[in-house]
Image 1: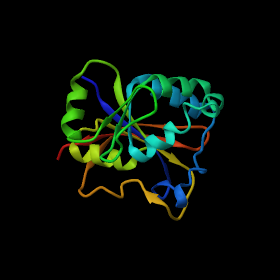
Image 2: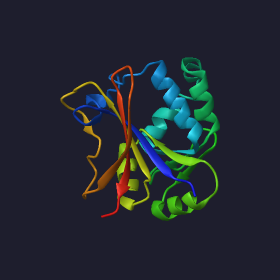
Image 3: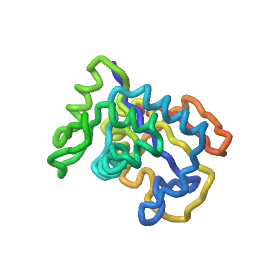
Image 4: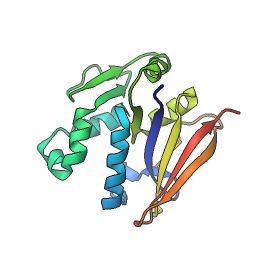
Amino acid sequence: MRKIFSFMMVTLDGYFEGRDHDLSWHNTDEEFNEFSLGQLDEAGTLMFGRLTYQMMAEFWPTPAGKKADPAVAERMNGTDKIVVSRTLDRTEWANTRIISRDAARELTRLKQEPGKDIAILGSSNLTASVLQMGLLDELRIMMNPVILGGGAPLFGDTTSRIDLKLLKTRTFGSGNVLHSYRPVTV
């Protein structure tokens, strides 16, 4: 059985993006890049919400994306992708399909298939939805050593309490700290 994990970058004050969708605070270096490649290697499917999908699809297949990080671009472009959206009706990015209705049933079915895990990357609303559906197996939060004072909160769309069990932490030389959690059924 495949598991679904989500990876999110977040500030110390709980924002996944700053005002006006600012991501300049993302604290990345070679150690982070190696970690990111490892996560991509764990995944047989990448899953995005519409906004994150559009942002990724506008970058990774382009010459600029391939030049910026060839190894990540190769994995992003070559891996199967799912975009969960009620409004998107077609995709341009290779290996992408849309889930437009009954996401819980479709994700439950996908988890039963053989293969590598399903990774949600950078889609906070989708992460909150999958978490509330009870289908998220692991939540990986990379805390960046920065306070923004405003932006979009990581779990702004969460409507109920969800308890988590800490699985592991990892401190990076950059000051980032990865927290890996498993949702706990109460």
